[in-house]
Image 1 (cartoon, rainbow, N blue to C red):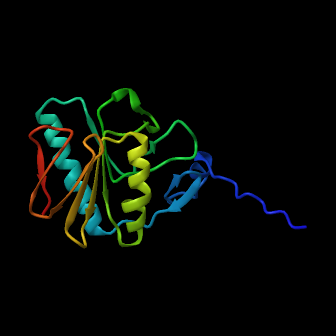
Image 2: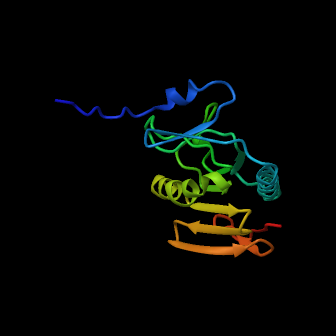
Image 3: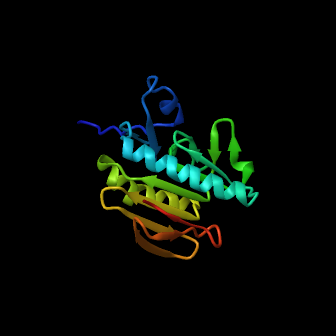
Length: 177
């Protein structure tokens, strides 16, 4: 009689054991390999990093913005590790030398052609259940920003060129060009 073996869940140790230069995320014990980002993707990440960082600095805010690659350990386990394109963390107690322990307040993911289901479904669920307050999905192909405010229980969509209000900062909006 054949016995089906349960597939072993991967852990953070498996992520750290990846060959140099290889990037992956770990969600519920499953490794998802990441392709190198293209130039448009990196321009958008840099744009958000600069806009958000400048705003926080101008307001003498407590939050910090971290662009990828930056480790986020979503849950208090060793089977969930992500590298959001932008992580904004307002509780400095979550920040360690290795990254962020727990959910950032605001996460932005810039969609790459090969990772749409990951950003729109898998990460959406993980971020919501982990306690992320706000999640933006920026789709350069559709020139659209989808904003999930988990605290308010709403989802809104904006086109590039429109002011996108930031839920965690009253009076702050970003116009994606």
